[in-house]
Amino acid sequence: MTLTTSTLDSVIVIWHVAVNNGDGATAAAACTEDVVLGDLTGEVAGRDVMRRWVESAGVRLMPRDCYDVPGGIVVAQDAVAEGGAPTTVFSAFGLRNGSISSIHRFPSLEEARAFRLAA
Image (cartoon, rainbow, N blue to C red; front, side, top):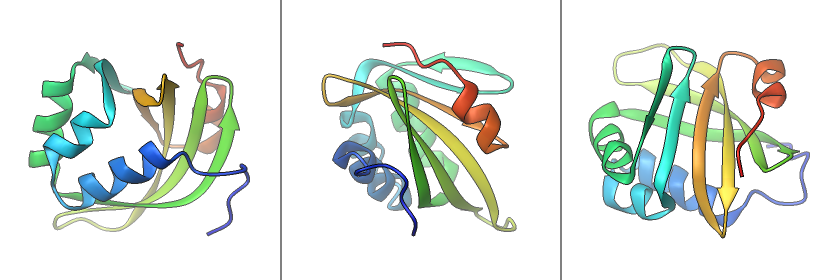
């Protein structure tokens, strides 16, 4: 793993471990109450949405590279969904007061780094 930031924030590490274990409660606890989840199709918000997604997604995400951006960190992840082929996704993690405030997924590093994270 080649990290191009000083550190991968510990709350993002906790979130990845929880996702990989299907532990929705721990993943949600790593987030703000109003956490926003987004991709190219839209956004949803809230810890309950996060918990349900983690418990049903059946995905494993391995952080590979990360990049500091204003308001957070972009993480390149090797992703494998149940029954799916491995792929690389890029997630922009917004951070607020030591918690994850948003996660937006993109197909390219350029799109993820260009996304404006809200504080």
